[in-house]
Image 1 (tube, rainbow, N blue to C red):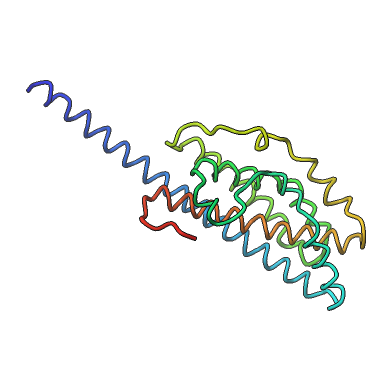
Image 2: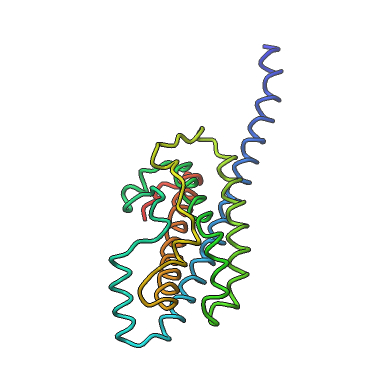
Length: 210
């Protein structure tokens, strides 16, 4: 009986510590989701601003090229649809999000020289990407789901980020800027989706459907 009473304070402390860790985890998730939502909105605005400067025929041609082309980050293995996203573990979603954000650290710096419409947002985006990368890394380290196992495809190195976007052929800077902004918007949407699902899973909500 005495041992039971001795164990009770230990169990209570353990319970409070666990509850505190869960609250801190949710706080970090809230910050990460808020930041990527802001980045996604910035990406949409920058793309729309640039798209608005194009002639109708030019816009149609660039859209056709983009649909047939691919983004540098497409080499990162990620869920192909909503069903696969929902089946993925929290750690897998966090890890993919980390790599997607990391893949834009260098290209985001080229936005400042791409178009005058982008100058006012470029430095802000680079800083927010760096902050978000740190936040996602903290979420990965604090996850209670165990260690992430990488398959061979997921551990492959990406090609040099700068070379891909700077060496696009065709219409030169116009095509490069269009694909750079379209890919950035696409990837920020991905990260927003992955972090939102991961956050929902960690909050133990009953319904985390997209």
